Amino acid sequence: MRTYGISWTDDRNDQLVALKLRGLTVNAIAAELGVSRNSVTGRIHRLRERGDPRLPAAGPAIMNARRRRKTAAIAPPVTIADHVAEAMARGSSSFVSAAFGLCTPTEAKAAWQTILDRYGWQAA
Image (cartoon, rainbow, N blue to C red; front, side, top):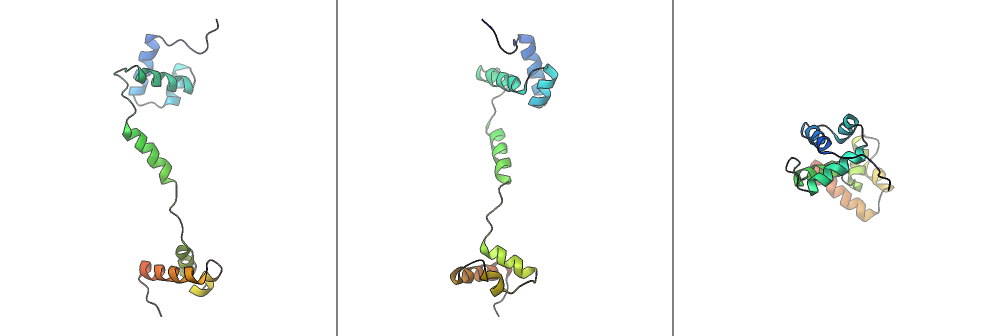
């Protein structure tokens, strides 16, 4: 029977845990031990599953940080009012010409009201 991968001895496990506790990334640990990144990730996972007290479970703080990084990259939706206000701020067009190609008259009226409210402008 052929075995794949490396043999994880107690000494290698101790080395892995020590590097992890020093704050090294999985890639750095893999390079230090001469194994693949997936080997390190899998071994850490299996040690945590066994309840190794040296490696606390990845708690909500870590998971929430990952989730925040993903959601931070998502920009808020841009509204018609934003497009119209940007065109007007550049001074390149009036409200009517900026809104003409972007929306229906009903949407234009709502966009105008949003711009007035947001920027404190007075209707002429």
